[in-house]
Image (tube, rainbow, N blue to C red):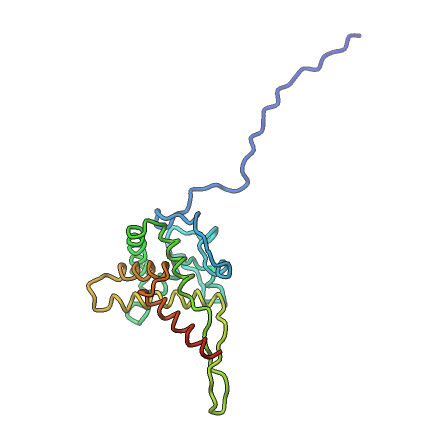
Length: 213
């Protein structure tokens, strides 16, 4: 009996699909990409939320970041900037106003520096956070100052506070809008310029703590 040849069956090639869902790129306000943002200070990488799951279309996530300690570290950094602007009673809760200010600020930063404004904000935060502070030590009337290292988390918090405080003071009784003042403050801080309120304050805090070592 002759050998029967088995029919050759063409097996269709199975397309390999990527495991990760490749959706549209998330851009802040539909303009600014989070992909190429770099945090140059390795100690602050975990506390400046600007990559991966922290990329957002608008700095308004409505997250409950105050419920647990350290949870606000996962709040997108641009949203933290907006929240920091809502200070001093009359501005409490006006997050849409704060977001409008931040959006205009990003536009001004891009016009002046021709860089991704999110990167400029990250650089400003890295440069503005004091690395050393002094605390009060002692009791029973004998009080002296002791220099202590500042944690990375507090450095980020303090930097955001100094940047927005500097902008608020610069725009008060001034023709310049708060967006322009905040943009100037952030650009100067990112460059490490002493024209920045945040950089001046940081240097002052570090100088005082150096004398208290």
